[in-house]
Every structure is written in structure tokens, then in C-alpha cells.
Length: 386
Image (cartoon, rainbow, N blue to C red; front, top):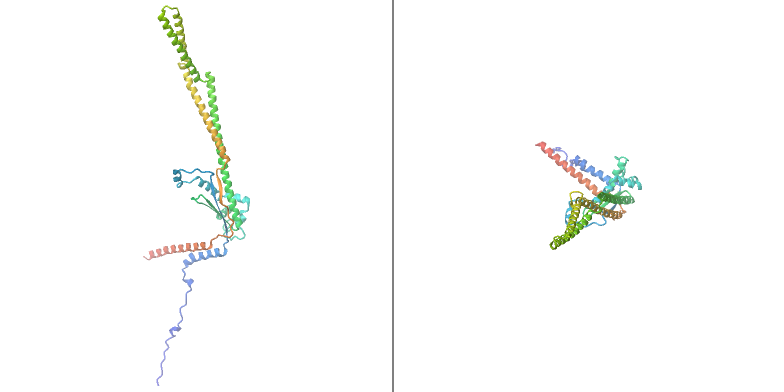
């Protein structure tokens, strides 16, 4: 009887131990974990567990003039390439709202520092943040984080958004900023009205001074020449000359008549004497009006120039007085208004931070950064291999 020969070949295949599985997290590239996962995880921890809710008070306002004329066709066409007066006035209010002056004005009414470092505020949102100092500059930087103002060029309406850790604080800060903007608009009105009235008063005083100077020059001319009105004097002299010439014509006609009827008449000598006297009188009167020296002709030119200067100064004074009255009337009515379209709201629930949107933004930004970096690295590696 033969013996069976058995040979040990090793363990059965099914009994072979399976290879050790590698955890999923070990398969993740280190760069991906550092660039994408870690920032997203940190953002999630902060946004979902640490970030304090913030209330937002929103208001809308417009800065306008009480009556604005309708622009012409060219004005409408040019509005698209320029900045209108309403925009300029609104931007002035915007700059005030974002300025240190607004923060200073608010600090006089209530404690802004206490509002920005409320107990419920987290360490990265409150004032001051770990890397900021408790200085006025640090307070201003924190203030700028909580206040946003924008402008809609289509409607001309400005929007003010104020964030705070307590809803009453958000509304109170928004109201105070709008009140400060209204005070700024009032100051602009007062300044513009004051400047306009002062300029009009100065123009009127200058016009009055020019009229006084013109009147004094005219009076001095009359006293020096002993004529109230050389033009009237010349007119009277012309009338006198005309009358003398009529009488001279009558005498000459009478002499011709006498000479024709009685050539030896003794009255001819008397007529000749009278004719000579009239002719001499006419020459003297004409010399007074338009002679070489001491005549009225050059005096009339100087006189008319002085009268013209006085009339121009008088018209200028009338215009300056009308401008002053208009400036005073404009000063009595307000040129600019800050009108609240929507008063600051009192939020009933916090709307910031928008956690999911911010978290998604962080993740997508990190993912894009990683993808760009990976593509750059792949290109460099391929270039080295070539």
C-alpha cells in the first residue's frame, strides 16, 4: 500500500490578507489642503461659530433744489458726459458722511466707541481688532467698516447703510449721520446766500461810488465853465442867431425898397448902420457857438461825455440794486434740500454677516487660486522635463 505524498504550498489565496487601505484624507494633496481646505475650514469656524450678527439700518435720501429748470436738448445730451449740480451736492454729503467730521459730530451726541465694541461683538468685528490700536485713527477705520453710502445715477437717490451690533444703535447712527448731512446742506445754503449778498452789496457800493464820481465831475465842469448845460446854451444861441438873421433879412429887404424908391434918402444910412450891427451881432453869436477859442463846441463834447458817464453809472447802479434785492430774496429761501426718501429703518433681525455666501466665496476663491497655482506648476514641470 502506497503512502500519499503531501506538499505544503502555502496558505489558500482567500486567506491572504488584503492590503491596508489608505485613508481618504491622505490622498488629498498637501497643497490643496493648505490652499483650499484650511482657509475654508477656518472661515466656516469663524462664520458659523464665532461671527457676531450685525443689524443693518438702511435709509435713502436725495439732495435737490426747490425748483430746477428743464434742461434744453443740448443740456440733456450733455448730462451723460458730465456731472450735474445735484450729483455734486450729493457727493458733498457723501464725503461728509464718510469723514472724520461726521464721526466727531456723532461722538458729541453719544458714545460711538461703546457702540462699536459692544459685549456681543466678536473679536474680529469689534473695535478695536487685535491688530488695531485704541486711537482716534483706529476708531475712524472701524467706523468706515460699519458705514456705507452709495449713489444711483439713474434716480439721483443716495443709499445709506449703517451696521451695528444692536439694532437701536444702527438706527441711531443712521439718523445722526443724516442730521449731520442736513446741517451740512444748511451751511452750504447759508454760505452761498451770504457770499451772494456780500458780492451784490459790494457791486452796489462800487456802482454808487462811480455814480458819485461822475456827478462830481459834471458839477465841477459846470462850475468851471459857468454853464449848467452847454447843449441848451448852444441851442438858445442858435435860436438867437436865427432871430437875428430874420431881422437882418427884413432890414436888407427894406433898404433895397428904399434905395429903389429914393436913392438919396437919408434913411439909407440908418438902415446900413442897423444892417452892419446885426451882421456883427450874428458873427459874435456864431463865434460863441463854434469859434476858434472860447466857443461852446469843444465844451459840448466834454459835457456830453460827462453826462454819458453819469447815465451809465446810474444804469449800473439800478442794475446792482436789482441784483442785491434778488440776492436778498434768494437768501430768504433755501436753495438746497436734503430730503429723506426713506427714514432709517429699525431692523428686527440681523442681516449680516451673510454666512453661507461668504463661506462659498472663500471656498471658490481658494479653489480658483489653487487651480491657477496648479496650472502654473504643471507648466513649469513640463517645461523642465522638455
